[in-house]
Length: 315
Image 1 (cartoon, rainbow, N blue to C red):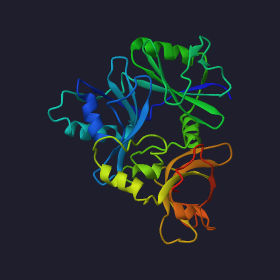
Image 2 (cartoon, helix red, strand yellow):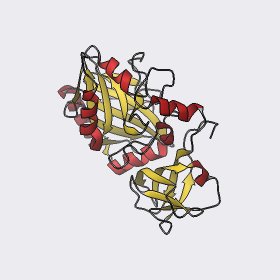
Image 3 (tube, one colour):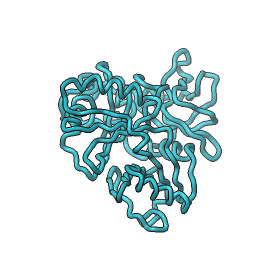
Image 4 (cartoon, rainbow, N blue to C red):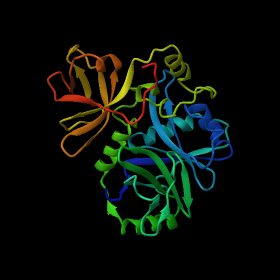
């Protein structure tokens, strides 16, 4: 596949800064923040006291040591207001840094030699690893089958200039192509259409390393831990294929129980012939002979497809 570079304008960046910024996020997120190598990125969820996800983040440390958090733009304002509620006497601030921290997605063949562009920018070798150039952060994301994924972050005018130069040298990608690669990587995100719908395990977040069960308290921790250790995980995220269009928030029905939805679309994107989606489903709905349908029992039929990672054996 040709290398593509796509502006990710559907994402925003919040920036936590100050001497106690890590203390704030440690107390609010499902992820460990205090003991975190600077050369790695991490996923995290932000939950209600009932364990439902308000938002999720990709987090990394900036060149100055602040903590940057990418999330869906539809949730940025509400998430910023909620995080600021918990600052109290902590010596830190949280701001919207989307104007300064612009995001770009790179898709390329895994057969590439680990560099990017005609100037051979070195790329991070392992998923979630981070490399830095002057004014730019490069984050290796988990691959989709047949596709390497990178996130580029411009942290300064110099970094933005270099990325704009790169855009003149490699092909422009589309948001739909980026979303399709994300679906195929099996990584779903909360949006305005799905906020407060899922406990982290419903999106396979513990399988993706976004939940640390050894860290201290955070909102919803009791529910998240009980779901994990009492074996009460009844719903998971699966990859589906079917005729489109599909959209986040669409309900999924199963023919064996047509009176009520068995799940919800988390993310979807058009593929060459069909649409592909990640959907949170009752596990039981995936193990019977019944058929899955989008939006109603009479809606388009959907088929299960494989994820690129294994779910925990309890499922």
